Image (cartoon, rainbow, N blue to C red; front, side, top):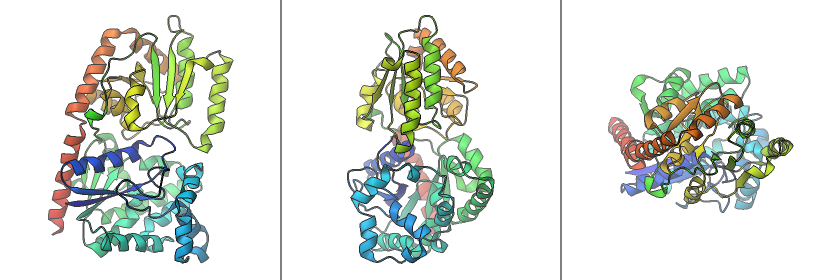
Length: 432
């Protein structure tokens, strides 16, 4: 089977769990003997070049689609200009700009992309279809998220193949918009969902949520959790002296980094926790600089500026060395997430998780038995849960062993990939 996974590139400037999931999934498919490729949209998957490891070029380049959306005369730009705007240097620059990673200001662009052949980026879609037809004719196309559904109708029409779509955190992008845009987008996504042969949610929580938002019938909706390769992560017991709290995600307000800083300050003021440390990794965009300076100022005011360490290298192959130096991991995302890859990466390394009682977090904690949840999602509640967890060495050991076992037996990429392949086979059979 030949599979093309179409994913949004992010340039590699910060930890993007969804992007890492997509790349790892393609590698897992290849291990099973199938011909699988990752095709990036918007930006490369890294800042090194304009291709992913499979050698596929970037389509719908971020700069090109911006110009096509905002300047009518550039919707039929000459090929030389299109290539210039899609060059590695230009896209590397775009990757550093925060505007490409937040919904505000991109409402009309999001609508246009969902319209597909009727949108302002029709030339981009034609280029993609031509490439798939003449270079990489697949048996099935897998869209990384539902915001890409505008591609599906034309792919099915021109290539006569099924298209399936993953569901993970699309609501975060849409909910950041005004009420008028939200209503319009959910309506458009219900409409475009008719072009999808199967939807695959990463958690039961998100499946239930998106089923209603996107009018998805039961027979089209499946649940396949994220999986990781346990062999990539080295297991070790949680560090105890001194206790170290870890954070792995883009360091911004929405992902709970400020909440974590406030909880850390409160914890250090508790008797017996004066020596606790904090290690944070996951990167940032230019948009986050002012926010991070404010957090450091807060730490300095309390005399804790030397008790935090920022780790700049958050590549998957380097994460084991990060996790072996921490006791627990917490990413207290303000509104929760559909899953959260960082949880599995921590558990694979034997690090317990402490997450808010929001979205899919309780579901993951319950299935893995690898950590605990807290409520409400406030600094005081998180500080109290940290204190409770760090004081109980027996529970830390139990969480550590449970988490690793769950990654090996439930959230193992070999298992989840086979689950996904079963869905592929079903929709291909139905398409004949």
